[in-house]
Image (cartoon, rainbow, N blue to C red):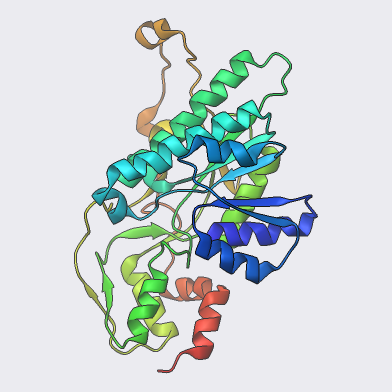
Length: 332
């Protein structure tokens, strides 16, 4: 996918011994193989749902990026059990195999939809995070020599021009001479460039602590602002129209919940969220808590983050090589 292609381009600069690309999509692997034509890349067809196929590739591996997921909100709403198999059971298989084979570090990729989730995609991603945190706690409690696998994760919002984002859809509509379709004009979404998302993951690869989640701070805009920006960039005269919110969609996305912010560490560009520390002493859940000033802290959302106007959104979009390429070939 989008992340896999970009992170491989970054990792190859560090002269690794080998990079294994493990996925069930032979077409994407075929395209990637032709694109890179690099002997350091090894392509393996397999599925994170299948324990045996994961086990077959993970021996001798030092680092794992777990990006496999069902990401489309409508798809997960229609087929929630499939989302469970990939997003929850899949990460469980990967982490178990990594721990058995003494992988140094596993970084899981999550989404803003995992915070206060209202859709199946977000719910399964939230449980994916909980699986990682639970297994990290087990390792910390049992790892006497401090050489066990470090499990950590990142969470980010919409990545601009990724396959799950709306911008490629907007561009396909304007190429066909149609109005752009916007679900709700006041809906807000985080805006993150793919290199920035990869930068977050590489940061966590080096500095990530076990059981911790890391979030990159991002600007946001309304969907109306985004539609206006695309129309202005491509001089699209037919404009846009509002079609209504789809099943499972939020008006605003949350990257860090109120409860998480109360224990988060601000790293300027990032938030670091330590795991909750009750451990497995269940008595603590019933008799002991912590006084917190919850009324003084608000969630970090696409509504209250830095809000871009149309001009600023255009400037951001124009940094994307995909937009520049589309402009070269676009006939108004």
